[in-house]
Image (cartoon, rainbow, N blue to C red; front, top):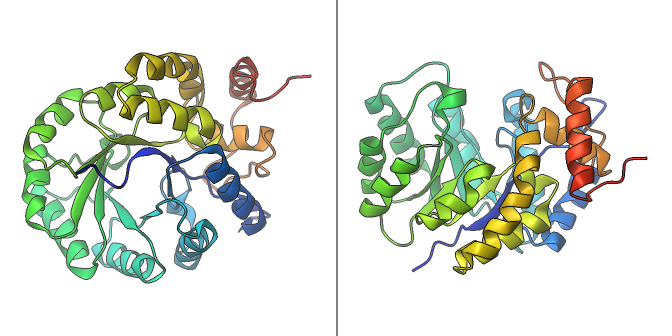
Amino acid sequence: MQPKLKGSITAMITPFRNGKVDYDAFGKFINWQIAEGTHGFVPCGTTGESPTLNHDDHNEVIRFCIEETKGRIPVIAGTGSNSTEEAISMSVTAEKNGADAVLVVVPYYNKPTQEGLYQHFRAVDAAIGIPLIVYNVPGRTITDIKDETLLRLFELRNFKGVKDATGNLERIRFLKKHTPEDFAYLGGEDDLAVEINKLGACGTISVTSNIAPKLCAEMQSLSLAGKVKEAEKIQEKLMPLHSAMFCETSPGPVKYAAKLLGLCDGSLKLPLVEIAAEHRQVVEKTMSDLMLIKIK
């Protein structure tokens, strides 16, 4: 049985205006993404600036996304925290609001042991009744959840997938040998999207799909249908854009790109600020080359 969570899943930006969430822009963004073919949403991930959203805004952004999506595609709510109590609270709220799954990041900053990681996810799992996707991104969290710890999590009832942003292709080879067919192995790096699908992944939680949703969705659909060469052609075209989205700390570049597309005003919450002038030029040129925008 194939995983239900698959394809091009957008790690959604959170539009702001005057320091507040711009729900009008967010609603338009959601419907545009669905019309462009996006296969799923992750609100309140890193790209959505979850570290600087207060709890009320965090929960409301997820609730609004679920309500506006109206079941057309899955919504995987970003509910992670370095506090287990907070992760439980946000996960329970997301489930009550109708989330299809939760994405829970490895706790950051406090550097738990592997046993601490296991107990963290075990506690979240025990509090909910929807799929739990573990997000491993040691470049941001410092702590890396080991493959052996991930395999321990299979005793939990809701552990149904992992978002891997380690860039280590050996990990997917190892885990695919030890996981059931319906386990959702999702990538967290756009530039490896086709490569990891070839190794058995079922999609990518994507930054680039915020601004090129149709191309990302087409690439994923082709890749998952076994049309690898066609998918690789799109990926080759997208590679400069993938790079541009990380020319400065994300989500700075993708927020600026969204501004160029008229999707939002591009503002970020401190301590994030608008990207530097030289990086704005990189984003503009890359988008122009892909004919996403026209530079006057």
